[in-house]
Length: 295
Image (cartoon, rainbow, N blue to C red):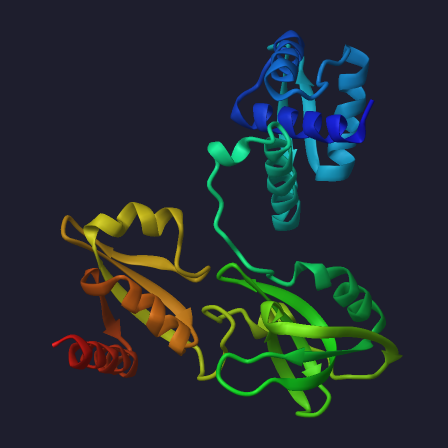
């Protein structure tokens, strides 16, 4: 059986049992129906399903057990992390795109340029071995420059990937947008560099910027944004501090950087900065700039 069929079957079983619990017959019947719809060979025996359950637990961290009282199978433990979920989503998208060569008639994807994923393998290998990376950084604001650094991590922010590394020339930690890197080279030259706790360093970052000390930020939104803010919080620190029929107020604990200002501006008149006062003044200055341009 092709490996792609096995992966697709795992994903199908996981998605099905995340919705509800089902009997073995219902699961096997569903797989048979999906085989017809998707073009993948998903039909299996009871014995193969048992092996799939074991593989799903080992690979995805998801435990599926038989509820003897109800005679159904259900997920009793889901230990999948962010990486596993992203992998599941990616594989599911690949299977969808493979269904038809005419998929462009039905799915409209953004026209994106390279986001630097092609560097991932070399970067991870360099991180594990503390090898030096060399590349050209093509800045949006200044001339291109040659960089040498010891990589520490890859961070995703707002659909972009950034290399977090110790810059050997600047002697400090820097972030580099992978979409702006060219002439990339893995040197295989091991070099010592300071340690850094990436999770702690970016704990209060709104995006990739960390200048200015983190502080409490309170934002007031029009009530129409309640469901959106609850389903997609602005930051992991977000808490709702006030809610009524007219508005919703949320509190964040973040670095008040330009990235945060731009996010606030995106909402226009339906978002108001309550505190801190300095952030309120920064937004006010941006509004004045807009007014100068358009009026």
